[in-house]
Amino acid sequence: MTWLDKIIGPRIPDSVLHRERRRFRRPTLLLGTAALLLLISIFFPYWRIRLFAPQYPGGLVAKVYVNRVEGDVREIDGLNHYIGMRPLEEAAQLERSLSIILIVAMALLVAGAIYVHSPWAAVLSLPALLYPLIFLADLYYWLWNFGTHLDPRAPLSSSVKPFVPPLLGEARGPVSRSGHLGHRTLAGHPGLYPDHCRPLLPPQGIQAVLRSLCPRGAGIASRRCCCSW
Image 1 (cartoon, rainbow, N blue to C red):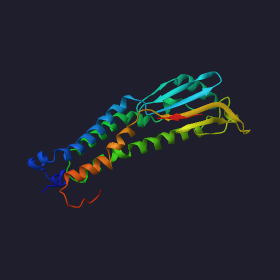
Image 2 (tube, rainbow, N blue to C red; image 1 turned 180 degrees about the vertical axis):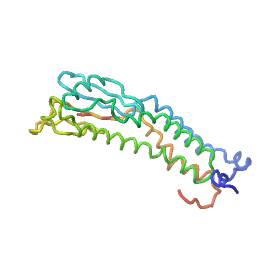
Image 3 (cartoon, rainbow, N blue to C red; image 1 turned 30 degrees about the vertical axis):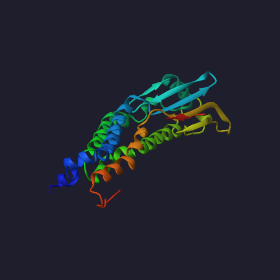
Image 4 (cartoon, one colour; image 1 turned 90 degrees about the vertical axis):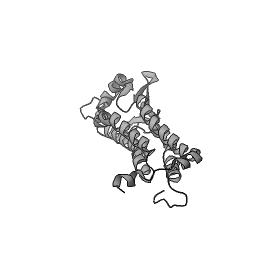
């Protein structure tokens, strides 16, 4: 048996596939749907931030996609300029340049797990499973980086304390050095996101793969800044 045979696992006899069709169809549908949703997520915003200011009572919104930022970017950058925050377009340039390639690669790995009849199916799906956590961690890093590294030459930089816009939820900010709250409310929340794929991945998806593609009885080795989604 070659190393490739060990990774792919044993072939399922046609008689078994026909007799237990539902058992083998479920992991195929779960993993296939997860791979498709990952690809579809490219066309939707992953995260949004809404900013309320006296001159903009209706609020300003920036929508963060995996490879670009859309919305009221110019207006938000104009307000942030006064406190010394860099333009939004400067954030996560490396991540945005690689995002499409990485998402397509993760989708292919998840789709490839359909044809793997061994615990390696879980390994192939692991990047997609960790992707939501990595995205949130990277997003928080850039929020922290932008909010705590203000340009000291900005008109209001000397009167504003460094701050971190909220990843999720709502907050008031920035705060002046005298302790007074700023007049802007920030709110962060998620947009459409590959987190929708998580119910289709481990434990449901991968566990279904391992249970269905391994012989029964055989042990399995490893089983008002407001930000919004």
